[in-house]
Amino acid sequence: MAVNNMTTTAAPNMTTTAVNNMTTTAGNNMTTTAAPNMTTTAGNNITTTAVNNMTTTAVNNMTTTAVNNMTTTAGNNMTTTAVNNMTTTAVNNMTTTAGNNMTTTAVNNMTTTAVNNMTTTAGNNMTTVPPLTPNITVEALETPVSRAECGTQQLCVAEPSVCDPSAAGSCFFLAARQQSGSNFDFSISGESDGYIAATLSPDSTVGDNDPTYVCANNNGVVRFFSTVLNNGQLVSTELNVNSVRGRVNGRRIQCSFAATLPSATTRTTGFAISLSDGSFNPTSGDLGSPTTRFRSPAVDLTNVNATVNNEITTTATTTAAPTTTATTTTTATTTTAGIMTTAAVTNMTTTAVNNMTTTAGNNMTTTAGNNMTTVPPLTPNITVEALETPVSRAECGTQQLCVAEPSVCDPSATGSCFFLAARQQSGSNFDFSISGESDGYIAATLSPDSTVGDNDPTYVCANNNGVVRFFSTVLNNGQLVSTELNVNSVRGRVNGRRIQCSFAATLPSATTRTTGFAISLSDGSFNPTSGDLGSPTTRFRSPAVDLTNVNATVNNEITTTTTTTTTTAAPTTTVNHGITFHQSLTQALLITVGALGLAML
Image (tube, rainbow, N blue to C red; front, top):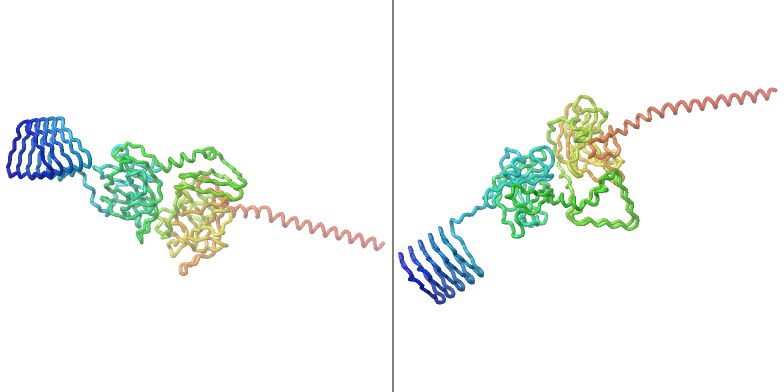
């Protein structure tokens, strides 16, 4: 037991051997100066507890060998200065706990060899970056997300790779900038009617309880969720995230936030990034299962110059390589007889060219592998918002397919005409605009075969006392039957008899008999009191049309049929029958007169 203010000076070549279970407690302000060639061998279970202001100065060639279960607890303000050739060899189960403000200054040739189960616990004032305090309150994002500083101040990933989140167009984007330690600033952008999300996985397997940051469109404003992605489901949890800002512009959702990421595993050098979207119910707050739009391998988020590829796109391109010949062919026909079996491997993507016909024999089986990428259908929502910009012919033939009756119809000008524009979002999801004159409603029917009216989806915009009321229906045997369709983002306006509306819809798959959809534009009566829709009168009907071909020429089959009948049928029928009857009557009279003459003779 050492009292306070004790000073001990050891002579040269001093050897101290401590027996087993030795305990030494040093008092305050203890100073120990060890002379040259001092050797200390500690036996088993030695415990040394140093209190405040202990200073140890070791001179030359000091060797300390600790055997089993040595524990050293240092008090506050402990300073150890080692000079030349100090060697410490710790064997089994050595534990060192450092108190506050501990400083160790090693000079020349200091060697510490720790063997089994060595544990060091550092006290206060050790420099580490604390995690962020959770706060997911959303403030307004004043500056839109952009590609500024990509490659200089922040790492950027996108799908497609040229995505500019500040420009028009559908794309997914993430930017990451390190604050310090594991704290990063993130910005994400994407198009969705529900939510967009970013998942950061500390290993290469995305979806194993990985932190996922969700920005949802909550009736025009951003609602933020901190979640983990596990087995394809988002589970709300508290994450170290704050400084959340967000904005919604139509279908485009953008937000920024700061987050503390978990430590990357020893198997990777960074984080795998996943960008996704999904449905969101503003009433219940439920998040649908995410659909992945971008997925990367492990990325060092601090390397702003890193090239990050989309594994989904890469996989699809690599796997689909054998179909290159088919893609460059205008028309491909494959006929298979017998028992055909097709098995698709994991991550298989098949791209079919236009007008490809496959005739399969009996007992055909197709098995698709896992992770096939499909575009999810839109979430139904037929709430009507104001259509600020009138429907027009702008971008017809460049960005959208347009059909009209008459063909020169300009829906932004005065005059009675019917008009539809179609623009593909992705997959089977399209944006539509329709315009027409009616005291009741106008409607657009899209038939996946050439027979319009066989339970075909029909989108109805009715004049409900000066505002648009939207109906999702099917047309069957000339009657409109209300049903739920995958349609949303509805906007409408009424100006006198002119009704205009725009909406997004997921179309059914076209049948094998056609390469597109037959389009029908119609109008009919509407009772605002009862909500009843009268039978539609068709004003325009097309053959099957490829809606993705914005340059397609689409004729009105009703006009063509009417013109043909008027020009050819009427004159031919009337004139020919009259001539035939006149000739027959004349011949009969001549025969009768001849017979009478012969009888008189």
